[in-house]
Length: 514
Picture 1 (cartoon, helix red, strand yellow):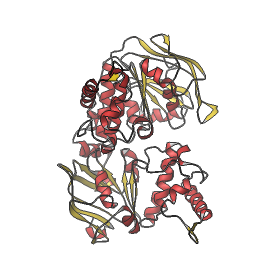
Picture 2 (cartoon, rainbow, N blue to C red; picture 1 turned 180 degrees about the vertical axis):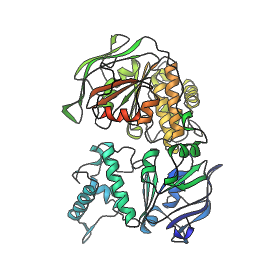
Picture 3 (tube, rainbow, N blue to C red; picture 1 turned 120 degrees about the horizontal axis):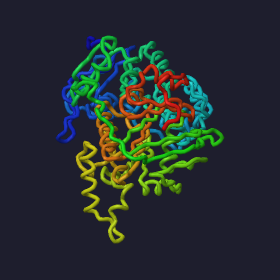
Picture 4 (cartoon, helix red, strand yellow; picture 1 turned 180 degrees about the horizontal axis):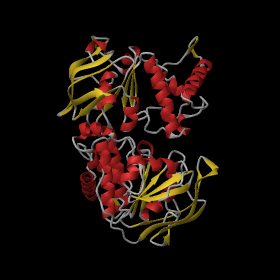
């Protein structure tokens, strides 16, 4: 593609932070009416490049061109005024404000005499939400919405700016399949009207579906470009990580021990709608050294199941036993003390404290183990934190670094490391690879395998078919709170998995989830 066709272009851009080169001589451009999918591992430089194009950061060397002419984007507001809008990977909403207030924050519609025309704002909010097929009251507080709905609000805010260039960084990480379809329809409408879209996603098949062009970054350098129609996922992965896709899944032969976690007739109500059962009469046994996967779509009950096991949601009925002994149901702290801990699905809201350092986040849940004579032994804490940073391979400048300075994948490793520092017997992980790149996913999968080799019972949820097929020793398929299939690794194809999750019968499916 000729440079003259680019509406926005980074020209020989380098970005240096101290002694770290985040970008090295990158040339990257986007054309009107086309979707450019940008791939790369966490730390490859994707977010830094997008921040430069959105006026958040400034290049150390090189420059940005708009419509073929050099331009200096002084700030995000300056970039927005010139038609460049960005949807960030991590939500930047105000949970204490309503949907409409979030959409019009700092760009309110004037009603004259210094007032705000809230009626116009409400009507516009309703219209944009309808376009995204979300029937939400504009006056609802954002903090009361589920994560996927908050993601839709973030997308709606960007769409309201009517940008010429729209940068979308992980826009579907919390969306359901129907919501993704709606977003893709909107993207096609935008490109049809001449908008240039940059699309970043760790869901490679999804990004390839919507993309016209493909660009791959690795270690701050642009390593590959192609027309999307001429590549496949294997090619993208190999360009991203420099190795074959099959090597990303750990090759393990499970060695299982005694029964460790046992569920008998577990019934869990939906916290948002107590009249609906999220889990209905589920029985399950997980042994020492076993990895059990729970596959299900949004609304299947997979998150509610793990939260009940972790003590966050009290079950309506049924039993949870640990080594044959009923688990005391006194809340999260007691479950952690008894050896059951959850790595939550929303690491930003439930897994990390943003004002704390990497080390402080790691030691938080297991702080009691470092207490000696009523005081925390800082030496013991520091030693444990440094060991865990090494064990879970967190890429950081040190334990004192800000948690916000880490990539999404490394933040997820910190949340897992925090759980492991409590010395659990049962490790529960809710969508552990959400919003992380393929390289970080491989590290997380290897972490799970390593804990199973230590004798832990590992239970994780996923909505990713490839993970479901390759990672667990045993896979349970959950639909509307009921187990509709059970499979050993290699017993089911992707197509069969899709069918059984919709309620179709498969010959190899088990009957009792034991």
